Amino acid sequence: MNIRFDPEVATTAALLDALCDIYCNDPDRRTATIALPNPDTHAEALIAQAQNENLIDKAEQHDDHLLLTTSRQTFWQLASPWLKAPASSETPLRYTQSNNITHPIRPNNAEGTIYERHFPQIDMTFSLRTADPDADSEVFSAWMNLDRVAHFWDQRGTRAEHAAYLKERREDPHMHPMIGYFDGKPFGYFEFYWAKEDRLGAFYDAGDFDRGLHLLIGDAQFQSAGKLKAWWSGVLHYMFIDDPRTERLVGEPRVDHVRHIAYMHRMGFHTLKEFDFPHKRAALTVIEREKFFNDFRF
Image 1 (tube, rainbow, N blue to C red):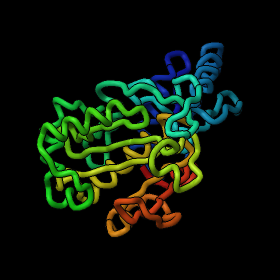
Image 2: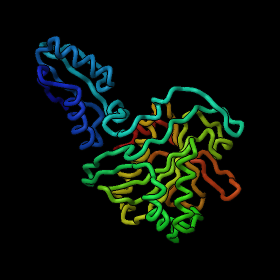
Image 3: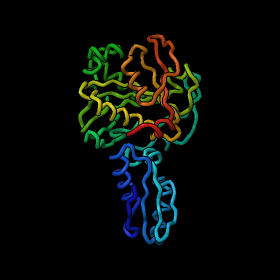
Image 4: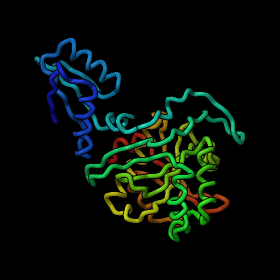
């Protein structure tokens, strides 16, 4: 696909909008080329800024215009416009110890909306917002007391107990609890964690920026095929772009959660091994950054 830009009025914001229109509406699109006719000083400045912001892969002179080459791999690894809070990678790299494990100091959890993305395929906007122990405890408690959720989470309790649970997660530096929304309606809980200092870290060779996830879907209508693929895509996308040093995502679902594991495999995960936590037999599931951005159709 080729598109043309007037270099006199083009900006990197306009370029990003054009790339969003291309790659978000065509999941199979792998490359797109942008033509800048009659390149001048303004065009050169635009190209330099676009390269600095990683919007383009390369720029080449062709007759009387410049061709800017872009790719889906590069585009989907951009933090903008998806992240709505400072990225974890902005935290200076320093190390600390907890439970005799040396690991990077983790960023403080930002408030409010962290990630937001519109999915044209279902015409809905998915977002992740940091869980508020007071405001979110009612819906969170209702979800935790559902039979199908309690079967795997084993966290039945009162609203006060669940508010305390969220508060504990908020105060744990290796955790970031979030509520998932579609068009402003809460539908699920997502608990992101840094794997190295998590209980999972002892069961494999965890990297400094490996990240894991616990989740539950409280509203069953968001388990339909299109919405299921959308929120899985959004969640995994967020985990990778929040820190470019995250090369691997991991999970540890119960081995009898067959449907969940099967869908993780469809998303590109593989099961590395099975192992025993004190409270469950778990599958260690893994997906690499390169596979996700190369193979998955967003």
